[in-house]
Image (spheres, rainbow, N blue to C red):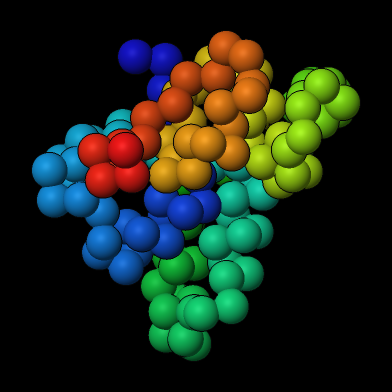
Length: 131
């Protein structure tokens, strides 16, 4: 196992207790052994508009257990290449380049947003639900 990078949507679903029941054990194992997030995910997760004040404090505590990977020149250069080659949002390009530059599997429900990116490994806990 090379590790995992958790996308924002997975953190929100996990926090809301809406992960598919048969995938909870797998996701919790990933969170215990390889809780990596991009700095973009940290910003998106903590900046999520639907947090109550109490929910925001719990989210801050939860994300404090993650290894947050900062934006650096290697990740930025790779994100630029991804954006020049594919039609993809900037945050997604940064998240994808963070996963690729660290040889991580991206854990996301939004697999379609990333399917155009070569060599990106994806684990979607909702795959059976979303098709």
